[in-house]
Image (tube, rainbow, N blue to C red; front, side, top):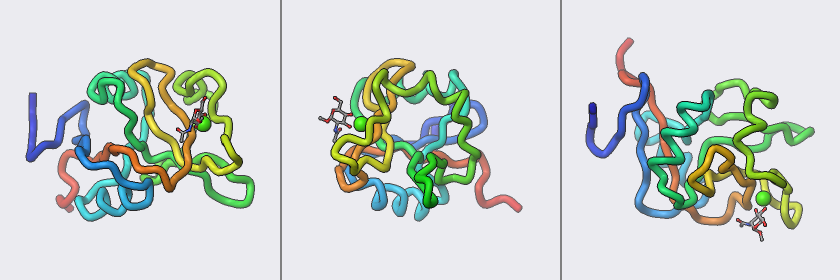
Amino acid sequence: QVVSQGWKYFRGHFYYFSQIPKTWYSAQQICISRNSHLTSVTSESEQEFLYRTAGGLPYWIGLTKAGSEGDWHWVDGTPYNKVQSEKFWIPGEPNNYGNNEHCVNLKTSALRSWNDASCDNTFLFICKRSYKPSEP
Ligand code: 2F8
Ligand code: CA
């Protein structure tokens, strides 16, 4: 297994599991400062890697609402696939609790682990970067 300065390797990307809780926006700023973004999730195997490594603790991921419609989008620019992503939400989520839940965390150690939560809440977070971010 390849490991670099606390980053864990999985299928072409490195992932950083923070040890300090931050708001969603602060977490994303920290990821950017480390050549990364809050993680996207684009496959069942990637989702499994993330929830297993998270071990049941909640972690922010890079999914947030954008635009006048408030559609979900990945902060790393990956297109959000609503159909493929359906199986990753906890049943009953996203529920926009208190009409103020615009960011998403990986909440449980299960395939269905996503919950929308207030972006101002502090949680641990997961950054994702490509294998060689600074290569041309
Ligand atoms: O019951 C699900 C509900 O639980 C909490 O609200 C009571 C969550 N809030 C936070 O995590 C901040 C809701 O997001 C969640 O939907
Ligand atoms: Ca919710």
